[in-house]
Length: 220
Image 1 (cartoon, rainbow, N blue to C red):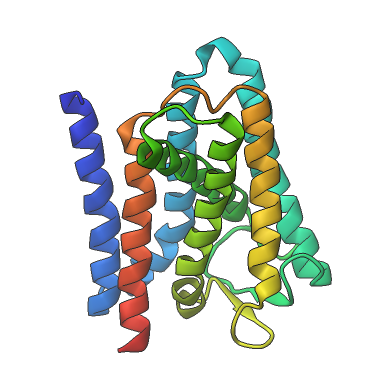
Image 2 (cartoon, one colour):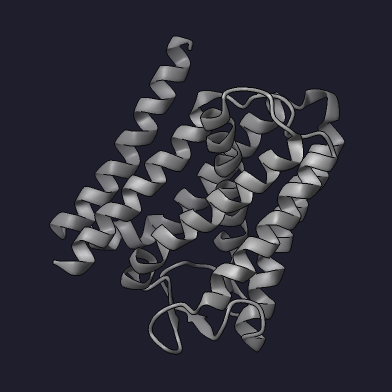
């Protein structure tokens, strides 16, 4: 790992853990609410840039896949909010701005960021070549596990709220089906074959730590 990569990873943990601690201590609340959407967008774009770097020979295919995850994730959320058919009945709060059709623009980027970081974690855990579609399945599972961890913290932060207070099983089933669709498409387009930089799987861990700190705040 190069010195630059080590610095990037250090700054990643510093930013997210500091943010979680600020929430835990109840300081800089207004700044944290304002910065939530820009951080989601910025991290997703940086992860996409990292993944593009290892798929230079499939540049157009990667851009198409990345666009599918970003805009597809946003579209599924818009349909879900409107109908309740995909994830269950929920609405977004006013924390994440701007919004279109009742859905924060940052949510599409969140889908992209979680997708890429989940792939990075799956690659890191396996550490050896396995069937690429098994890797895609693991990526989808890690995306659902991330949502399971994120839900109570996001509800506490006012990102969204559920009609029956807690997310239904339908939410996690919807996440899995959509995540698997994105993952299988990426695998089929030969975008999952090359290992991603360490920063990518660290992004999964750092975000998980952030939401864990928020969860601690929500129950204390």
